[in-house]
Length: 115
Image (tube, rainbow, N blue to C red; front, side, top):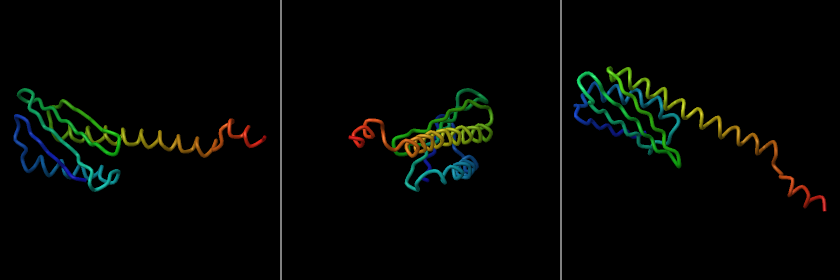
């Protein structure tokens, strides 16, 4: 997974960059290596930061935002939110797949086969 880090009105230090890379690698197992993860750090006011994570993968966009005082805590919270979105999508797709397997032939096709 490729990482794009941007700082608006805040300097992205090596410590922020290293911590972000480490945490985003937890998400890499869900995506292809070419997938780009955009992380934006914004200084809102003294002591308040806003962090955005945006991952565009196939036809789905995973987006999480957090207003926080501690960037490290906020980033961990965002990774948890993104993981939840991924799990939800996976559950929905598995449910659709199981329904398709359980009912492979619709009633209209069954009527045509009986004739």
